[in-house]
Figure 1: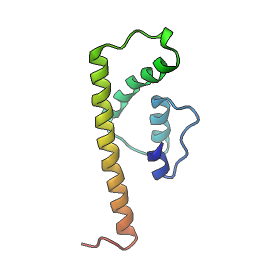
Figure 2: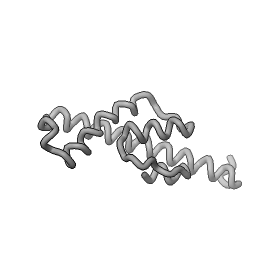
Figure 3: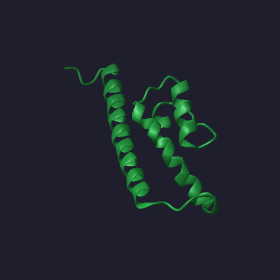
Length: 96
């Protein structure tokens, strides 16, 4: 949600990862192809809401979710730094 805010976008009313990625794509925001793997994480949101509809989470699923989340955080941090750097340049700062 903070990333949407930084980009000056309203998040979609539905909070699923696939919906958010589609929303960003329609707004012209590009992201690496691997980010589509995050759609797998949607099931963990569903598990917390409707645990009786899901199979138990396996250890490998847990580690995969952590790896994807860590990779996403690294990517978002890098994007934020790029946006802030670009903003600083356009505002007359950081002239090299």
